[in-house]
Each structure stands twice: as C-alpha cells, then as structure tokens.
Image (cartoon, rainbow, N blue to C red; front, side):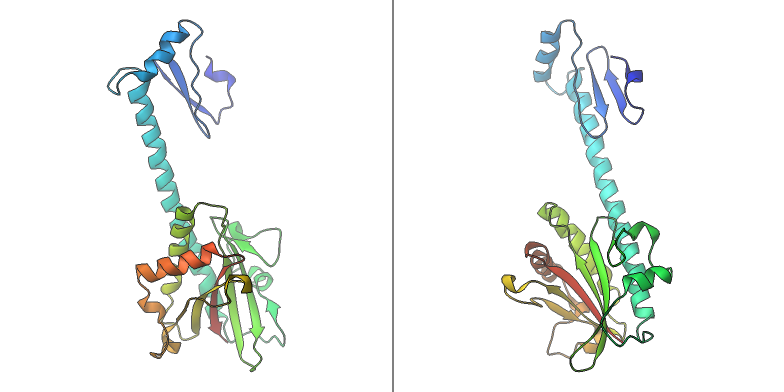
Length: 244
C-alpha cells in the first residue's frame, strides 16, 4: 500500500509487512494480497505477539489518551469563554437604558465582549467550544424590576456522560461569581410539559437569606441533580440572572 496516494491529513502506521493502520477519523485494516488467510488468522494471537495486536492496542490507547486530553482542553476553554461572557454581563449591569425587553448578544458583539470563535450567523445566539447555544436578554418584569438573563442550552444530542461533564463545568464556572452583588440566581428552566419552570434554583450571596439554596454551597450531588434535569428535559435551559 502506498501512503503517498492518501490525503496528507491521514497518517499511516505500518507494522512490518502485515497491515497498515490509518490514524485519523477512522481505523482501517487492509491485509496484503498475498497470504491473506494467514494475516487474518493473526488477529487471534495473544497480545504479546509481535504482530498487530500489541501494536494495535498501544495505538488505540494513544488515541483514547489524546481524546481525553482534548476533552479536558475544551472544558478549560469553555470555562474561559463563559467567564468572559459573565464578566461582561456583570460589568455592564446597571448601564443599559432599554425601555423594553431587548436581546443583548448584538450589543455585546459590538462592544467587543464576545470572543470571535463564539459568534455565529445569528446575531442573537452564540456558541461555546462544545456547541452549547447561549443567548442573553435584558428583561423588565411586571413589578418593574430590570434583569439581565443568560439562557444556556445544552446539546442533548450528545451522550449523557458527555453532557453531564459539560454541565458540571458550566455550573462550577458560574459558582465562581457567587459573591457578586448583582448575581441573583441560576436555575434550570424547563417547558411546562416537563412539570414547570425553575425546578432547581440556587441564589447568589446577596440573595441567599437562609430561606433558599445558596449557589456557593452547591455540592457535587446537587450539581449532578441540577444537570440531570437541565439536560434531560424538553427545551430545558440553564438560566443565569442578575439584577440591573
């Protein structure tokens, strides 16, 4: 097999004259034309055999290690992106002069507060490194109170473990701001079909008065329960609210 005939983005690792393993988005094993029955028979040999098995396991282990490292890198990147966004929201709290509900993402973009890699074709929605959709809104409640709200929607097409790790990362990032005077609460926001809104709500220090749950005190089990609801309900979001 000639590796030169394959796209340069795909790398070949060949073991002796037996087989070649393509290291890319898939694994391909191609036996040579000669003595193919003997080659395929070698797949049943012990792992200490000097043929495919030991090398293949090593290669698969390396790919798994790379995937784990890349996922950890993305979690750190997500923390950075969300921290930048939350800092911007809190910094501008009290400076808006809107007289009606207003989508804020376009304003944050114009102010240079949104990392370019988070922007999309939509002016109202941005995405983190995992493809988590985020929008922001300035809202005026019926009692006249003004709020800024972030709505964070998890990508529920991913497997539960994957979503859980991302959700835990989001909540732990938000927890870093628990003592900011304007941060009111973080909650799960589900549709009415899921049993109503605000199934789990945790308040910032300024609004945690002993009659409700404090954001700073959220432990792993509470975060896990929060995330199971946030990722397992129809049209469910994580809602972050601070006062103006």
